Length: 420
Image (tube, rainbow, N blue to C red):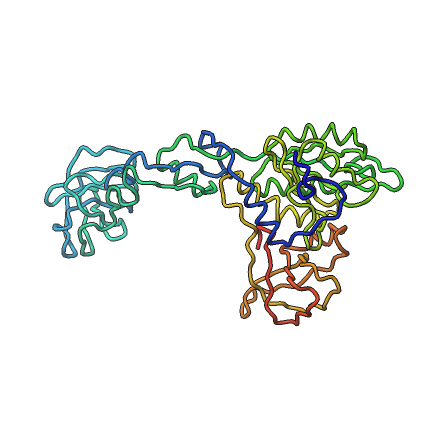
């Protein structure tokens, strides 16, 4: 571990990074985890690590796109053509019969088009004889009608899906169509979450006077799942050096470690020293932002990514969105980029603040039929108010909070809900 004050932990004064500097620092540190091979039914939500190549043409044959009759277009150039019906080709069959002049084969959607036929006529455009042996074609037909030619979607050897790409339902359907029973993916990142504080009690347990229910652990576990990672709760860690040393040693078995609380300047803010004792090199401790100023980031002796998040729940939430999410993306093979910002119109004016730190405020956004995306801050009581945060579906970004922002002005927002 370096003895350079710029890279060691502690409560010594140090420069606060700008938000952009913190993002750049994290992005420079992240490389993907080694990939692995997994069964297709096990990869939902994971990131593709190697191309998926079509194992055969798709469709693998000329395919009927409608229920109807396979015919020769030259027999049906004019309405009223009467054809002999030879039989039926159901989907999944390998047709042995061929269509000759004056003949037709009834065919189901998805079935292979028989030899000799070059068009399919919809059932709705035909009239069948009472005994079923003949069919009259009521509309003119051109070659290729209602047929998907072989390899019209993809050819054997085509790259169907290229990495990096998160595998959701549509991508899994494409992989299955390509014949990929197994897929090369990046592993789901395991994230150890250790919440510190003697004042905390797990939900469902009895509180003593002065204690509060612990909300950061459940919140961060839910966020990690939302980010595509696997949370590993370490639990509530008492404010003692011994307890921190033991529990953080367990947490350091994972590639990403989050500690919550104990990062400021109080007498029981012991996490920085505990991280130093474990050989974690500090990359930064403190960002010129609110909420979330005390956030810290470092690298463990085995390359672990280690975050120290503030204990206030809104601060921890904002820091997870701005920083932890970047590392998860990078470890899973995606670009370790900050969350995207969208432009919105302020529905209500914002008063100037005395604090000039960049502010990220819980907000509501919605689409207006005439003005597009609208935004307004939520009513909340500061970084210790998760109930106020629960009203939000976005973070409103104020680069310079000391400047008033009248209603109707444009502002940037970060969406934090998949429902928007």
